[in-house]
Image (cartoon, rainbow, N blue to C red):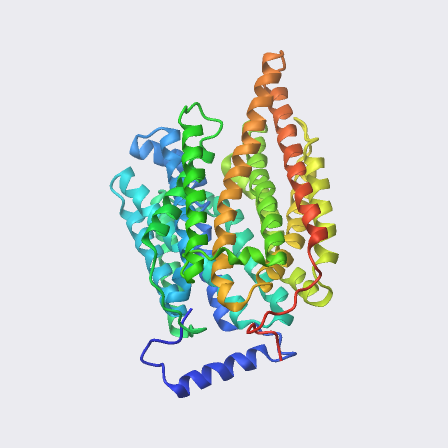
Amino acid sequence: MTAPTTGESTPDRATETIAELEDELAPGSRRTPLVITLLVAATFVVILNETILVNALPRMMVDFGVTERTAQWLSTVFMLTMAAVIPVTGWFLQRVSTRAAYATAMSTFIVGTSLAVVAPAFEVLIVARAIQAAGTAVMMPLLMTTLMTVVPAHDRGRVMGNVTLAMSCAPALGPAVSGVILHLGSWRLIFAVVLPIAVLVTVGGLRLLQNVGEPRRSAVSWLSVVLAGSGFGTLVYGLSKIGTDSGSTPFLIGVGAALVVAFVGYQLRLQRSDSPLLDLRTLRHRSYAISLVLLSAGFMAFLGSMILLPLYLQNLRGLSELEAGLMVMPGGLAMGVLGPQVGKLYDRFGSRPLVIPGAFAMVALLGLLSRVGTDTPYPMLLALHVALMASLATVFTPAFTIGLGDLPPQLYSHGSSLLGTLQQVAGAIGTALLIVILDNRSDALARGGAAPDEAFVGGLQWAFAAGAMIGVVVVVCAFLLPSKVDAPEGAPAGH
C-alpha cells in the first residue's frame, strides 16, 4: 500500500485526506470509512462469480459439447487461479498504491468478464474464468489490509463484520442469482449482467477512492512466484480430484506439497534479507497463528458442509438446482446480516464470549445434521442451516479481527494473503475429505445390501459427523484466543 501517485497527490490533498479519515474514525462517529464501503462492494461483486456458474453448467455442456467433468473446469480453474495468485498479493499490495491495486484487480476482472460474454469456444471461456479469478484474488487481501490500516482497534469488529457480507452472502447468492438469470436467457446473460455492475463499481471506486499507507519498494523474487503459483495451484488441484478414479491424484498432491514446502523454505531464507514474497514472520504472533488454525478448520467444516446439503437436496430429495440454491440462501444471508452485529459485540465484549459459544454451537449443529434422514422436514433443514451459519458468524468475524489485529502494520498485507491462501487450501481439503467420506460410506452400505437412498443418507451422516469432528479444532482454538489484543506499535489504535 503506497502513498498517492496520481496528479492529485499534493500536500494539501494529503492533509485533507488525513483529516477526512480522522473525522470518520473519531470516537463516537461510528462511521464506516468510505474506502472500506467501496472495497466491500467491489469484493462482493467479484466473489459472487465464484459460485454463479453452478446452475449454468448443464447448458454450457450442451452449447460447447463437453462432458460434465470437463465443464467442472469452469469452477476448478477459478479456485486454482485464486490459490496460485493470492500468495503473491502480500508483496504486490505493499508495492503499489490502494488505487493502483484496486484498478488492477477490477480491470482484470472486467477483462475476464468481457471475454466470457463473447467466448466462442470452451477453451476461451476457461481462460476468461482464470482472468476473472486473478482479479478476485487481489480484492479480499486488499480489503483486509486497508481495513486494518485505516480503522482503529476500538472499531474494527464492527467494520470487519461488514466484510462478512462479501464473504458469505456473495457465495450463497451465486446459485440463486444465476438460476433467476437463466430463466430469462442464455448463460452468457450471467456475465452480461455482471459486467456493467463491475464497471460502475470500478468507475465509482476510482472517483472516490483515496490511497492509504506508505510505499515499500522491493524487488520481486520470481522463483518465489513460480514456487507459489505451481505449488499451491497443484496442491489444490490434486485435492479437488480426491474421490475420482484418477490415478494421478496422489502424485499431484505430493508434487504440490513438495513445491509448497520448497516455497516456505525459500521464504524463510529471503526473510534474512527482508525480501520475502510472503512474509512468514506473521506466524510468530501467537494470536494470529491461533486464528489462522481456527479459521482454516472452520473453513474446512463450513465449505465442506456447504457442498453436502445441496447434494442431499438435489440427489435425494429431487429439488432443482435453483430450488436447492434458494433453500441454502437464507443461511448465507443470515451470516452476512449478523456479521456487523457480531462485530459490534466484539468491540464491546471481546472475542471469547462470542467465539467459544459459537464454536460449541457449530459442532452441535453439525452433529444434528449428521442425523438427517430421507424425509427430514424442510423447515427443520432450513432452521439447522440458518443456525449453523449464524454460529459461524460469531466465530469468523472476531477471529479475523483479533488475528490480523495482532500483527504490526507492515505485516497486514502478508497476513491477509496467508489467510486467503490457507482459506483456499482448507476449503479444498474440507470439500475433498467430506465427499470422500460420503462416497466411501455410501459404497460400503450399498455393498452390504442397503437401498440407494439409505446408502446415500448413511454416507451423508458420516460426512456431517466428520465436519463436527473438524469443528472440535475450532473449539480448542477458541479457548486459546485472548479476548482482545493490544494494538502493535504503529497500528491505528484509536484516539
